[in-house]
Length: 483
Image 1: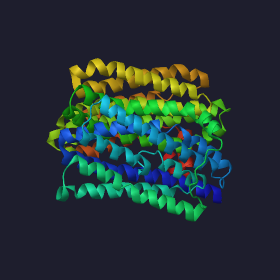
Image 2 (image 1 turned 30 degrees about the horizontal axis):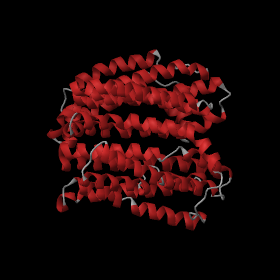
Image 3 (image 1 turned 90 degrees about the horizontal axis):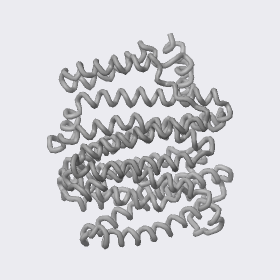
Image 4 (image 1 turned 135 degrees about the horizontal axis):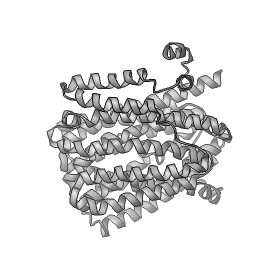
């Protein structure tokens, strides 16, 4: 019972922490975009994309391997110290290569070079990059104490938001935002180290034991992580290089507004993944779980997409002002791409559970290759709208690849039954007609209509509802909801 309570509390801490982070970052992104203006915000996201890609090259896929080994021996920090040592060494190497690229290929001036290096320094301290902080989080994960890392992560977010709020009274500039980004990350980093020492007696000691074994184990995951990061950032990077900072700013608002939605498949995977792994030989049970998870994500993503699509301009101008009104159309394309990406991300977890990570790697190579191939000719002609459409198309092609490869798992996607299709068609029309209502009224009524229609049309079966309630420890609600 204690173990179950700890597990439930840990899952709750992760979920609440992620949604709180999403809530805080929503306001941070909105204010940053408003204060900086379109061009400076575009430049900010251009530098952020470069640093994100560079930071993932230092990742090497170490976290999952260290987490696995630490779970076996919670008091042995050999692999943890080794992972920190490897990442510090690789950080210095990637930092050197990054500066060579910025100076001789991208031709950055001194001011831009310094700002990028300050940004890159944040990868050590910041929970937003998950390069060093995710390694420090491992003892908390092993001991089912993720509440601490979530507190420290949201401390970063709150401090950054506070610094952005006071920006108009100090200095509205790109330099101020980047320095604030780094400074806001330091207290959480220091507190993590302090608590790890006090609670688990951990202190960093340089380590090279088992170096070859750890790298050999982690490299297959490293390639996947790098390519997925490129997929998430390359559109902004190429827009800056091929088009303009203004176009990047317009596109970045749409992209940063949509990107946080990916925490939903992460939260659901955290809840269901242990059961998927433990029951993987039970193909019928995993077929059921696979289709249930995809159904939950499909209903959510379609609901969000419909609400946004029919009032995109009002949403953008209300949040970011008239200067970003052109972000509405790319936001619609990106929102609809989430429907396909959610399906892909869930499927990739099932491939991982069955030890078929090579499929994940091939998937990441495919979608990056397709995206770049489409972006290069499309951006000069269609700018930010073309970039968003390219991401949607790459997501569709990735989905086709996943469906073809699902036969390796003996899993068939069957979540699109006649109830779901009927629900989709009805709400396609209802959201369109509701969009003629005043904006605030529309935002209240449309989601309510989507929920009520999902219940009335019985989008989820009795067994599916019981499974969902069981995972959130609310089995007592089953009688009420099913009735």
